[in-house]
Length: 404
Image (cartoon, rainbow, N blue to C red):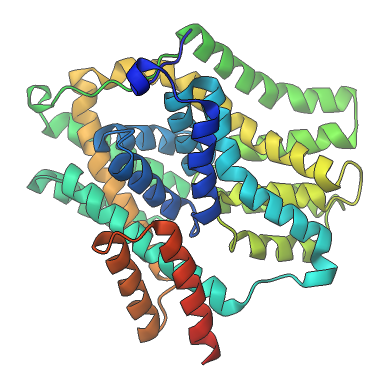
């Protein structure tokens, strides 16, 4: 088994350099999973050119099929591509730890400094997500929807996603787009797929998949034989990370059912933490760290937070590492390329639908909101202002508009 990168003369990037890149994203990527994919595209496709547009969307399409948080899985995949297994861990740590640490501190200091950030600041952060997603949709559409059939697939995919706004609707759109692409696009018309500069042996992939299912089945059995609160926590959060389709918000009822009725976390505490999780950058599943730090039983605090945080993300590592070695050969099949052409157009449609709901519908309520979103889009696309600076500026302007 080997993992290699095409940069630095074929040498993989150091885990530290990968960590620093993802740390900046972890500190500035506000707006939820759809916005994260926009930040990733800007950073890895446009700015650093770590991936081509096509390779990025192929990786995104794969992660859309897998259970778990798609944006975090894309980040793990990019980290694996750039720095091997150490790079995958570094990418996850850099992107995840800033919000996790903020939520742990919040859990430990709720009674001192309150349960929420200023409303105007939160609203400004939602508005900047509109600009980020709009930029991603426009850029991806220009590269992936290059003719009438692809534009049509994207448009129908967006309509279907809005009519059936759930995880199964999203999966159905991807499957239908693949079938249409397979029937509509002739394999001879497809361009050769760029090889992802990554090689994980099928043996390692198979071991990862076996371990994923072994833990999913074995943890409840182990808990029945050796009952303990620690093992129950690992089981609950591993299962939540394994069975969620459609983004971090879908995991909310699973976590609520696992923690509140059992008396692990008070319902008011649960809701306060979930509210703040919307305001911090990075993946929403770092809400698990808040819950672990807020446990009424031991372990709690930092130990409980780290236990829950790792447990909920382990399935994503196992699935990405397990599936990639089988996915890469398929990408080079002409028939797979035809299907991927349809899938790529469908993914653009899914992002277009997400731009309207929930991104636009939860942020744009009045003319001032639209104006601020327009300024943010102008700054990103034409003035080439760094995304983190646009995020900070929109948050500040959102707060100022709320107090004047």
